[in-house]
Image 1 (cartoon, rainbow, N blue to C red):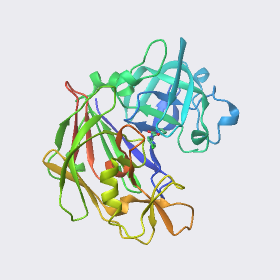
Image 2 (spheres, helix red, strand yellow):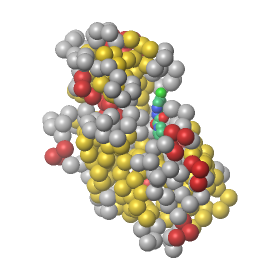
Image 3 (cartoon, rainbow, N blue to C red):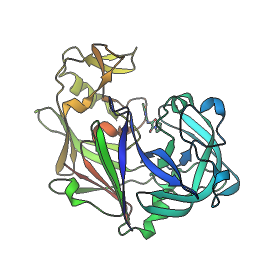
Image 4 (cartoon, rainbow, N blue to C red):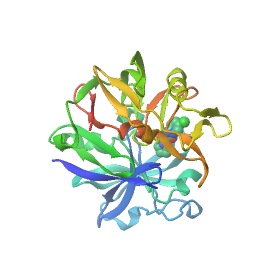
Length: 331
Ligand SMILES: O=C(Nc1ccc(Cl)cn1)C(=O)N1CCCC1
């Protein structure tokens, strides 16, 4: 089996996130979910979510699905790197993405969600695509959609072709050669504790010289920006006149009129170049001459994160084979 589904930018003014249509249950209920390689819970806004915390989201109602089964005695609770979170209980039901169906997928129904989820009406939940070891369901951890689907896929892979302010694609079970140029460079993945963790071989700012330095980080499709070591980020923003690391705004801001340099990162002996335009993330407020950078320091996170700002510059293969690897190609 194989399948494809669109990755639609939420608020295409600045690619906050990407959502993908899925159907759950019988008859099928359609929701738009944020596919997240940085976590491993599949949770949705539901008929169980506090009414005061639902603001326009589509919801999954298990009581309207003839194939839904309560996973009795199971609960979940998750906290993300930006401080947002959700919690609730668990059903199993049929779950379909791009024509690939998993029967009896654990679908975590939210009873509570934090304010940032309530205020984002275009995101109706998340599909975790990290390793199942990260799943928060208690007392028995559940498998991700990808882990459940893997055995029925033509190849145990999924790919991410995210795009700048445009609709991209998630493919399952195959590698679409038309989506990239040149070769795919595969790197080893550290699967402990459960992220797609790989080591980049270095970086260059604009047309500058390449700095060979190992940067271990996670590929995270649900993190909007990219967070790298302070030394790397400082050397980037030093090239932008008027850029400052603002305590007030919580990161590097710069004059929106700036022409930003590109940022190149190494993947083995190859490299990926993020155009400067992708690093101009957004005006700090509507109409402001000050913009917020898409490349920020990871100090304080304890982890480097290659988020959407980096991922959308590449075609990325998440290979769930034995051993798992991650592939990068230019496009
Ligand atoms: O919070 C996240 N990433 C993240 C991590 C660190 C920092 Cl500073 C900011 N963001 C993340 O992946 N998600 C998934 C759903 C909502 C947020």
